[in-house]
Length: 429
Image (spheres, rainbow, N blue to C red):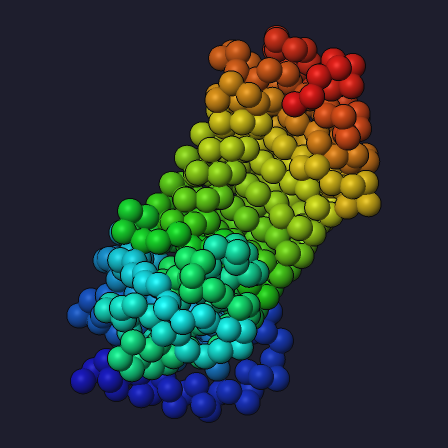
Protein backbone atom coordinates (compact mmCIF):
# COMPACT_ATOMS: atom_id res chain seq x y z
CA UNK A 1 0.00 0.00 0.00
CA UNK A 2 2.87 2.34 0.84
CA UNK A 3 4.52 1.72 -2.52
CA UNK A 4 1.25 2.25 -4.41
CA UNK A 5 0.69 5.59 -2.63
CA UNK A 6 4.24 6.74 -3.44
CA UNK A 7 3.84 5.84 -7.10
CA UNK A 8 0.47 7.57 -7.34
CA UNK A 9 1.92 10.73 -5.84
CA UNK A 10 4.87 10.47 -8.19
CA UNK A 11 2.67 10.21 -11.29
CA UNK A 12 0.58 13.18 -10.14
CA UNK A 13 3.76 15.14 -9.48
CA UNK A 14 5.04 14.31 -12.96
CA UNK A 15 1.92 15.84 -14.48
CA UNK A 16 2.07 18.99 -12.37
CA UNK A 17 5.66 19.68 -13.30
CA UNK A 18 5.50 18.61 -16.96
CA UNK A 19 4.84 22.07 -18.39
CA UNK A 20 7.58 23.68 -16.31
CA UNK A 21 10.06 20.93 -17.24
CA UNK A 22 9.44 21.22 -20.96
CA UNK A 23 10.41 24.89 -20.82
CA UNK A 24 13.63 24.16 -18.94
CA UNK A 25 16.96 23.44 -20.53
CA UNK A 26 17.20 19.64 -20.30
CA UNK A 27 20.96 19.72 -19.95
CA UNK A 28 20.91 21.76 -16.75
CA UNK A 29 17.53 20.90 -15.28
CA UNK A 30 17.77 20.63 -11.47
CA UNK A 31 14.84 18.21 -11.39
CA UNK A 32 17.07 15.28 -12.33
CA UNK A 33 18.46 15.20 -8.82
CA UNK A 34 15.14 15.91 -7.08
CA UNK A 35 13.20 12.75 -7.92
CA UNK A 36 14.19 9.20 -7.09
CA UNK A 37 12.46 5.86 -7.50
CA UNK A 38 14.01 2.73 -5.98
CA UNK A 39 13.61 -0.77 -7.40
CA UNK A 40 14.25 -4.19 -5.90
CA UNK A 41 13.16 -5.57 -2.53
CA UNK A 42 10.46 -5.02 0.06
CA UNK A 43 11.79 -1.63 1.13
CA UNK A 44 11.91 -0.27 -2.45
CA UNK A 45 9.22 1.81 -4.14
CA UNK A 46 8.90 -1.02 -6.69
CA UNK A 47 9.66 -4.45 -5.26
CA UNK A 48 10.26 -6.59 -8.36
CA UNK A 49 13.58 -7.87 -9.68
CA UNK A 50 12.79 -7.85 -13.39
CA UNK A 51 12.76 -5.74 -16.54
CA UNK A 52 9.14 -4.66 -16.01
CA UNK A 53 9.89 -3.20 -12.58
CA UNK A 54 12.86 -1.20 -13.88
CA UNK A 55 10.83 0.04 -16.84
CA UNK A 56 7.94 1.11 -14.61
CA UNK A 57 10.34 3.23 -12.58
CA UNK A 58 11.91 4.83 -15.67
CA UNK A 59 8.52 5.58 -17.20
CA UNK A 60 7.34 7.23 -13.99
CA UNK A 61 10.14 9.80 -14.41
CA UNK A 62 9.68 10.35 -18.13
CA UNK A 63 8.20 13.86 -17.85
CA UNK A 64 10.26 15.25 -15.01
CA UNK A 65 13.52 13.37 -15.13
CA UNK A 66 15.18 11.88 -12.06
CA UNK A 67 17.10 8.88 -10.76
CA UNK A 68 16.15 5.21 -10.74
CA UNK A 69 18.08 3.39 -8.02
CA UNK A 70 18.51 -0.35 -8.47
CA UNK A 71 19.08 -2.08 -5.16
CA UNK A 72 21.35 -5.13 -4.86
CA UNK A 73 19.92 -8.20 -6.53
CA UNK A 74 19.64 -10.06 -9.83
CA UNK A 75 17.11 -8.62 -12.29
CA UNK A 76 15.77 -10.87 -15.07
CA UNK A 77 15.78 -9.06 -18.43
CA UNK A 78 13.35 -10.59 -20.93
CA UNK A 79 13.25 -7.51 -23.19
CA UNK A 80 15.47 -4.41 -23.31
CA UNK A 81 15.22 -1.84 -20.53
CA UNK A 82 14.51 1.43 -22.40
CA UNK A 83 16.10 4.51 -20.87
CA UNK A 84 14.40 7.91 -21.23
CA UNK A 85 15.76 11.43 -21.49
CA UNK A 86 16.96 13.12 -18.29
CA UNK A 87 16.85 9.86 -16.33
CA UNK A 88 19.78 8.36 -14.46
CA UNK A 89 19.87 4.58 -13.96
CA UNK A 90 22.09 3.86 -10.95
CA UNK A 91 22.91 0.43 -9.55
CA UNK A 92 24.56 -0.63 -6.31
CA UNK A 93 27.82 -1.79 -7.86
CA UNK A 94 28.70 -5.44 -8.47
CA UNK A 95 25.70 -6.55 -6.42
CA UNK A 96 23.25 -5.18 -9.00
CA UNK A 97 23.12 -7.62 -11.92
CA UNK A 98 20.90 -7.31 -14.98
CA UNK A 99 20.78 -10.86 -16.30
CA UNK A 100 19.62 -11.61 -19.83
CA UNK A 101 16.87 -14.22 -20.03
CA UNK A 102 17.39 -17.30 -22.19
CA UNK A 103 17.27 -17.09 -25.97
CA UNK A 104 14.47 -18.32 -28.21
CA UNK A 105 14.70 -18.81 -31.98
CA UNK A 106 12.62 -20.31 -34.76
CA UNK A 107 12.45 -20.27 -38.53
CA UNK A 108 9.74 -18.51 -40.48
CA UNK A 109 8.12 -20.72 -43.12
CA UNK A 110 6.64 -18.05 -45.39
CA UNK A 111 8.80 -15.29 -46.89
CA UNK A 112 8.81 -12.16 -44.72
CA UNK A 113 8.54 -9.14 -47.03
CA UNK A 114 9.58 -5.51 -46.82
CA UNK A 115 7.08 -3.54 -44.72
CA UNK A 116 5.28 -6.64 -43.49
CA UNK A 117 4.05 -6.73 -39.89
CA UNK A 118 3.75 -10.48 -39.35
CA UNK A 119 5.81 -13.67 -39.57
CA UNK A 120 4.49 -17.18 -40.04
CA UNK A 121 6.84 -19.43 -38.08
CA UNK A 122 7.56 -23.07 -37.31
CA UNK A 123 7.03 -22.70 -33.57
CA UNK A 124 5.87 -19.83 -31.36
CA UNK A 125 6.77 -21.55 -28.06
CA UNK A 126 8.53 -19.16 -25.70
CA UNK A 127 7.73 -16.00 -27.63
CA UNK A 128 5.59 -13.47 -25.76
CA UNK A 129 3.88 -10.17 -26.42
CA UNK A 130 6.26 -7.36 -25.54
CA UNK A 131 9.43 -9.22 -26.49
CA UNK A 132 11.85 -7.55 -28.88
CA UNK A 133 12.84 -9.74 -31.82
CA UNK A 134 15.49 -9.82 -34.52
CA UNK A 135 14.66 -10.95 -38.08
CA UNK A 136 17.26 -12.03 -40.64
CA UNK A 137 18.17 -14.45 -43.40
CA UNK A 138 21.54 -15.45 -44.86
CA UNK A 139 21.77 -12.56 -47.38
CA UNK A 140 20.57 -10.05 -44.77
CA UNK A 141 22.16 -10.99 -41.46
CA UNK A 142 24.27 -7.99 -40.46
CA UNK A 143 23.95 -4.39 -39.33
CA UNK A 144 21.33 -2.28 -41.13
CA UNK A 145 19.98 -5.28 -43.07
CA UNK A 146 18.59 -6.83 -39.90
CA UNK A 147 15.06 -5.92 -38.78
CA UNK A 148 14.11 -5.43 -35.13
CA UNK A 149 10.65 -4.93 -33.68
CA UNK A 150 8.43 -5.69 -30.67
CA UNK A 151 5.85 -8.47 -30.65
CA UNK A 152 2.31 -7.08 -30.52
CA UNK A 153 0.33 -10.30 -30.79
CA UNK A 154 0.67 -14.06 -31.34
CA UNK A 155 -2.06 -16.14 -32.98
CA UNK A 156 -1.37 -19.82 -33.59
CA UNK A 157 1.75 -19.86 -35.83
CA UNK A 158 1.79 -16.13 -36.64
CA UNK A 159 3.83 -13.51 -34.76
CA UNK A 160 2.73 -9.89 -35.24
CA UNK A 161 5.22 -7.02 -34.82
CA UNK A 162 5.01 -3.26 -34.36
CA UNK A 163 7.39 -2.12 -37.14
CA UNK A 164 7.46 -3.09 -40.78
CA UNK A 165 10.38 -5.23 -41.94
CA UNK A 166 13.18 -3.31 -43.67
CA UNK A 167 14.18 -6.03 -46.19
CA UNK A 168 12.69 -8.94 -48.09
CA UNK A 169 13.66 -12.05 -46.12
CA UNK A 170 13.61 -15.53 -47.66
CA UNK A 171 12.28 -18.43 -45.65
CA UNK A 172 14.32 -20.86 -47.77
CA UNK A 173 17.58 -19.00 -47.03
CA UNK A 174 17.71 -19.64 -43.30
CA UNK A 175 15.08 -17.06 -42.42
CA UNK A 176 15.13 -16.68 -38.63
CA UNK A 177 13.34 -14.79 -35.87
CA UNK A 178 14.79 -14.73 -32.37
CA UNK A 179 14.51 -12.72 -29.18
CA UNK A 180 18.18 -11.68 -29.49
CA UNK A 181 18.24 -8.07 -28.27
CA UNK A 182 19.95 -5.64 -25.93
CA UNK A 183 19.88 -5.62 -22.16
CA UNK A 184 19.61 -1.81 -22.04
CA UNK A 185 18.65 0.45 -24.95
CA UNK A 186 19.12 4.22 -25.16
CA UNK A 187 17.23 5.28 -28.28
CA UNK A 188 16.41 8.91 -29.16
CA UNK A 189 17.44 10.02 -25.67
CA UNK A 190 19.29 13.07 -24.34
CA UNK A 191 21.09 13.86 -21.10
CA UNK A 192 20.94 10.48 -19.38
CA UNK A 193 23.34 8.08 -17.72
CA UNK A 194 23.84 4.48 -16.58
CA UNK A 195 26.22 3.69 -13.74
CA UNK A 196 27.35 1.17 -11.15
CA UNK A 197 25.84 -2.11 -12.29
CA UNK A 198 26.65 -5.40 -14.01
CA UNK A 199 25.15 -6.67 -17.26
CA UNK A 200 25.32 -10.44 -17.63
CA UNK A 201 24.52 -11.37 -21.22
CA UNK A 202 24.28 -15.11 -20.48
CA UNK A 203 26.06 -15.76 -23.74
CA UNK A 204 25.82 -19.54 -23.62
CA UNK A 205 22.02 -19.37 -23.46
CA UNK A 206 21.38 -16.68 -26.07
CA UNK A 207 21.55 -16.33 -29.83
CA UNK A 208 23.90 -13.90 -31.56
CA UNK A 209 22.61 -10.31 -31.61
CA UNK A 210 23.55 -7.95 -34.43
CA UNK A 211 25.82 -5.12 -33.29
CA UNK A 212 24.17 -2.17 -35.05
CA UNK A 213 20.78 -3.06 -33.59
CA UNK A 214 21.62 -4.68 -30.26
CA UNK A 215 24.34 -4.81 -27.59
CA UNK A 216 24.75 -5.24 -23.89
CA UNK A 217 24.08 -1.50 -23.98
CA UNK A 218 22.85 -0.05 -27.29
CA UNK A 219 22.86 3.74 -27.78
CA UNK A 220 21.15 4.95 -30.97
CA UNK A 221 20.24 8.43 -32.23
CA UNK A 222 21.06 9.92 -28.83
CA UNK A 223 23.31 12.61 -27.34
CA UNK A 224 24.96 13.53 -24.04
CA UNK A 225 24.87 10.00 -22.63
CA UNK A 226 27.32 8.77 -19.98
CA UNK A 227 28.11 5.15 -19.15
CA UNK A 228 30.18 4.98 -15.95
CA UNK A 229 31.30 2.07 -13.80
CA UNK A 230 29.51 -0.64 -15.77
CA UNK A 231 30.61 -4.24 -16.21
CA UNK A 232 29.30 -5.90 -19.38
CA UNK A 233 30.15 -9.58 -19.49
CA UNK A 234 29.33 -12.49 -21.78
CA UNK A 235 26.91 -10.77 -24.14
CA UNK A 236 26.45 -12.74 -27.37
CA UNK A 237 27.13 -9.75 -29.59
CA UNK A 238 28.81 -6.41 -28.87
CA UNK A 239 29.42 -5.14 -25.36
CA UNK A 240 28.50 -1.48 -25.92
CA UNK A 241 27.48 -0.10 -29.32
CA UNK A 242 26.64 3.51 -30.11
CA UNK A 243 25.41 4.58 -33.55
CA UNK A 244 24.22 7.94 -34.93
CA UNK A 245 25.11 9.77 -31.72
CA UNK A 246 26.93 12.79 -30.33
CA UNK A 247 28.70 13.35 -27.01
CA UNK A 248 28.77 9.80 -25.72
CA UNK A 249 31.09 9.04 -22.79
CA UNK A 250 32.09 5.49 -21.83
CA UNK A 251 34.34 5.45 -18.75
CA UNK A 252 35.55 3.37 -15.82
CA UNK A 253 33.91 0.25 -17.22
CA UNK A 254 34.85 -3.33 -18.02
CA UNK A 255 33.72 -5.08 -21.19
CA UNK A 256 34.64 -8.74 -21.46
CA UNK A 257 33.55 -12.00 -23.04
CA UNK A 258 31.52 -10.44 -25.86
CA UNK A 259 30.71 -12.61 -28.86
CA UNK A 260 31.78 -9.76 -31.12
CA UNK A 261 33.52 -6.43 -30.46
CA UNK A 262 33.84 -4.92 -26.99
CA UNK A 263 33.19 -1.26 -27.88
CA UNK A 264 31.68 -0.15 -31.20
CA UNK A 265 31.14 3.55 -31.94
CA UNK A 266 30.05 4.31 -35.49
CA UNK A 267 27.60 5.46 -38.16
CA UNK A 268 28.43 9.08 -37.43
CA UNK A 269 29.25 9.37 -33.71
CA UNK A 270 31.45 12.43 -33.18
CA UNK A 271 32.62 13.80 -29.83
CA UNK A 272 32.91 10.37 -28.22
CA UNK A 273 34.98 10.02 -25.04
CA UNK A 274 36.34 6.58 -24.13
CA UNK A 275 38.41 6.66 -20.96
CA UNK A 276 39.74 4.37 -18.21
CA UNK A 277 38.02 1.22 -19.45
CA UNK A 278 39.27 -2.38 -19.36
CA UNK A 279 38.24 -4.10 -22.61
CA UNK A 280 39.44 -7.67 -22.89
CA UNK A 281 38.78 -11.24 -24.03
CA UNK A 282 36.17 -10.23 -26.59
CA UNK A 283 35.84 -12.40 -29.70
CA UNK A 284 36.68 -9.64 -32.17
CA UNK A 285 38.19 -6.19 -31.52
CA UNK A 286 38.56 -4.40 -28.23
CA UNK A 287 37.56 -1.08 -29.83
CA UNK A 288 36.14 -1.02 -33.36
CA UNK A 289 35.74 2.60 -34.46
CA UNK A 290 33.38 2.31 -37.39
CA UNK A 291 32.30 5.15 -39.72
CA UNK A 292 32.59 8.90 -39.11
CA UNK A 293 33.76 8.95 -35.51
CA UNK A 294 35.63 12.24 -35.35
CA UNK A 295 36.87 14.82 -32.83
CA UNK A 296 36.94 12.17 -30.12
CA UNK A 297 39.26 10.98 -27.34
CA UNK A 298 40.40 7.49 -26.37
CA UNK A 299 42.47 7.83 -23.19
CA UNK A 300 43.74 5.68 -20.34
CA UNK A 301 42.20 2.39 -21.48
CA UNK A 302 43.35 -1.22 -21.44
CA UNK A 303 42.71 -3.16 -24.67
CA UNK A 304 44.04 -6.68 -24.33
CA UNK A 305 43.52 -10.37 -25.15
CA UNK A 306 40.91 -9.62 -27.80
CA UNK A 307 40.31 -11.99 -30.71
CA UNK A 308 41.48 -9.67 -33.47
CA UNK A 309 42.74 -6.09 -32.96
CA UNK A 310 43.11 -4.03 -29.82
CA UNK A 311 41.97 -0.90 -31.72
CA UNK A 312 40.64 -0.74 -35.28
CA UNK A 313 39.75 2.54 -37.02
CA UNK A 314 39.02 3.60 -40.58
CA UNK A 315 36.26 5.24 -42.60
CA UNK A 316 36.31 9.04 -42.04
CA UNK A 317 37.42 8.51 -38.43
CA UNK A 318 39.41 11.73 -38.17
CA UNK A 319 40.87 14.03 -35.52
CA UNK A 320 40.88 11.43 -32.76
CA UNK A 321 43.36 11.49 -29.87
CA UNK A 322 44.55 8.09 -28.59
CA UNK A 323 46.49 8.80 -25.41
CA UNK A 324 47.96 6.77 -22.53
CA UNK A 325 46.35 3.47 -23.56
CA UNK A 326 47.87 0.03 -22.95
CA UNK A 327 47.26 -2.20 -25.97
CA UNK A 328 48.64 -5.67 -25.47
CA UNK A 329 48.44 -9.39 -26.26
CA UNK A 330 45.67 -9.09 -28.82
CA UNK A 331 45.50 -11.95 -31.30
CA UNK A 332 46.39 -9.84 -34.36
CA UNK A 333 47.48 -6.17 -34.60
CA UNK A 334 47.59 -3.90 -31.59
CA UNK A 335 46.32 -0.99 -33.70
CA UNK A 336 44.93 -1.42 -37.21
CA UNK A 337 44.11 1.42 -39.61
CA UNK A 338 41.72 -0.21 -42.08
CA UNK A 339 42.10 0.06 -45.83
CA UNK A 340 40.32 3.15 -47.22
CA UNK A 341 40.68 5.43 -50.23
CA UNK A 342 42.46 8.68 -49.40
CA UNK A 343 39.20 10.67 -49.37
CA UNK A 344 37.82 8.41 -46.65
CA UNK A 345 40.98 7.52 -44.72
CA UNK A 346 41.40 8.21 -40.97
CA UNK A 347 43.28 11.52 -41.24
CA UNK A 348 44.81 13.68 -38.48
CA UNK A 349 44.75 11.08 -35.74
CA UNK A 350 47.33 11.24 -32.95
CA UNK A 351 48.68 8.37 -30.83
CA UNK A 352 50.47 9.76 -27.77
CA UNK A 353 52.17 7.88 -24.90
CA UNK A 354 50.53 4.53 -25.61
CA UNK A 355 52.16 1.23 -24.75
CA UNK A 356 51.72 -1.21 -27.65
CA UNK A 357 53.00 -4.54 -26.45
CA UNK A 358 53.21 -8.22 -27.41
CA UNK A 359 50.36 -8.18 -29.91
CA UNK A 360 50.07 -10.72 -32.73
CA UNK A 361 49.77 -13.67 -30.39
CA UNK A 362 48.37 -15.74 -33.28
CA UNK A 363 51.72 -15.28 -35.04
CA UNK A 364 50.57 -12.85 -37.72
CA UNK A 365 50.24 -9.38 -36.25
CA UNK A 366 52.02 -6.07 -35.86
CA UNK A 367 52.16 -3.47 -33.15
CA UNK A 368 50.74 -0.84 -35.49
CA UNK A 369 49.39 -1.66 -38.98
CA UNK A 370 48.73 1.13 -41.51
CA UNK A 371 46.53 0.02 -44.41
CA UNK A 372 45.29 3.34 -45.81
CA UNK A 373 46.77 6.70 -46.92
CA UNK A 374 46.03 8.45 -43.64
CA UNK A 375 47.38 12.01 -43.67
CA UNK A 376 48.95 13.67 -40.63
CA UNK A 377 49.08 10.48 -38.61
CA UNK A 378 51.22 11.26 -35.56
CA UNK A 379 52.87 8.71 -33.26
CA UNK A 380 54.45 10.52 -30.32
CA UNK A 381 56.22 9.07 -27.26
CA UNK A 382 54.72 5.59 -27.65
CA UNK A 383 56.41 2.44 -26.39
CA UNK A 384 56.54 -0.56 -28.73
CA UNK A 385 57.44 -3.48 -26.47
CA UNK A 386 57.96 -7.01 -27.75
CA UNK A 387 59.25 -9.19 -24.92
CA UNK A 388 57.16 -12.15 -26.16
CA UNK A 389 58.50 -11.72 -29.74
CA UNK A 390 54.98 -11.87 -31.16
CA UNK A 391 54.82 -8.52 -33.00
CA UNK A 392 56.51 -9.06 -36.37
CA UNK A 393 57.13 -5.33 -36.76
CA UNK A 394 56.53 -2.38 -34.48
CA UNK A 395 54.96 -0.30 -37.29
CA UNK A 396 54.05 -1.91 -40.61
CA UNK A 397 53.06 0.30 -43.55
CA UNK A 398 51.14 -1.65 -46.18
CA UNK A 399 51.39 -0.73 -49.84
CA UNK A 400 48.39 1.62 -49.67
CA UNK A 401 49.58 3.28 -46.47
CA UNK A 402 51.57 6.45 -45.84
CA UNK A 403 54.52 6.94 -43.52
CA UNK A 404 53.43 8.35 -40.14
CA UNK A 405 55.06 11.24 -38.34
CA UNK A 406 57.24 9.76 -35.57
CA UNK A 407 58.51 11.61 -32.52
CA UNK A 408 60.34 10.22 -29.48
CA UNK A 409 58.93 6.67 -29.67
CA UNK A 410 60.70 3.76 -27.94
CA UNK A 411 61.20 0.42 -29.67
CA UNK A 412 62.17 -3.03 -28.48
CA UNK A 413 63.56 -5.46 -31.05
CA UNK A 414 61.13 -6.76 -33.70
CA UNK A 415 62.00 -9.44 -36.26
CA UNK A 416 61.14 -7.26 -39.27
CA UNK A 417 62.17 -3.98 -37.69
CA UNK A 418 60.77 -0.82 -36.16
CA UNK A 419 59.26 0.93 -39.20
CA UNK A 420 58.69 -1.44 -42.12
CA UNK A 421 57.29 -0.67 -45.57
CA UNK A 422 55.63 -3.42 -47.55
CA UNK A 423 56.80 -1.83 -50.82
CA UNK A 424 60.44 -2.04 -49.77
CA UNK A 425 60.13 -5.64 -48.62
CA UNK A 426 58.52 -6.57 -51.92
CA UNK A 427 56.02 -8.88 -50.21
CA UNK A 428 52.24 -8.99 -50.12
CA UNK A 429 50.40 -9.67 -46.87
